Image (cartoon, rainbow, N blue to C red):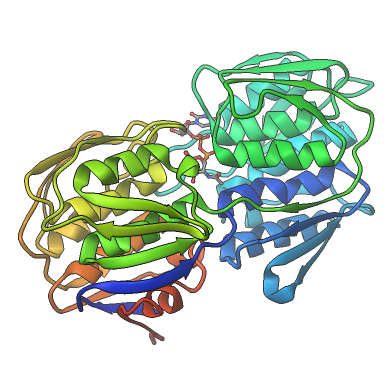
Length: 423
Ligand code: UD1
């Protein structure tokens, strides 16, 4: 298995282009299932999760062509051959459940394997299923699969009130509601930029949607949807990750395509920690204001709060801050697996339940460490940038799910980082 070796070597300088958002692309791709007409996505990221979604869509009979080195995805669901998403593909990626809403809405029935657990918690899909029930679907869980059936005449609009915010359940319900009969209201909906991006794409396809980006989304169902071409929004998590690189080891980096509105809560915390973020015509320029980073407390929340997907990377920064920071993880249980690895590098971290207390140390030291999930793996690379000596990160396949060309991007701003093939 491949490893990444990072050698801390001081300040970074230059520009890093930020890719299109993995999480937006993973919900925009299943939207092709809603229509007979082609859907083309531009600014798609080149990632293994996107290839997994491609395989899943192809297994249903959709055409998916990766053009321009994978940055353009030309899709057509004109001749679908199946409405069954198999366990073998779904178990690899939880976002596979996002094919259920579109299939059910267009064909009136679908069978999708339950995704199962994952490293960062149980992550059930009950909210997705309750939303479909509110639109009249009958659901049966058998042999690990959800067998979903719409009423005769198709899904019906309804009131879907989510008991708590779920990004995936909002996306699935939003897609299904575009083809339901009548009006659907999603209450306590997620407000993430990826939801706004999905709604904008669906609207180009002919959907009637109001209120995306707020906690109440209203959808007036239409009979059919058409084709569209849509540019995937910037990946705010990749953006935040690279913003932390100069924060953690000094220097100044401009993240091309970056926007503060995608990450306002995160930028506020960077400011409090002593990191300056400046808007430029091309993106965001980030630098350490002066001296040591200050400790800050962070609580993860649904958008517009601090994203859980940047918690691990922020922890890497706070490991060398002056003072003690408290990080509270409110979205996922068991999302501190990076803490023991950072401790191997000399960090002082106490984890109790969903709270991690980080006391800054003067220096981290390179060590062999193991990536445990996508965001944890990149937090170890960030920590390695600040550490003395070599940090050897193994199990980097996690990284390939969500970061394209991480070695090339960091190298281009002066980091000493290489990927080596393992036995
Ligand atoms: C999406 C993102 C993920 C991010 C997360 C929270 C994608 C592909 N992934 O995941 O990177 O970390 O949002 O911002 O977009 N839950 C239930 N029942 C459900 C659904 C969710 O209990 O039916 C729980 C989850 O276990 C979790 C919380 O709700 O504790 C939020 O999860 P959710 O917002 O649904 O996350 P995902 O859509 O899976």
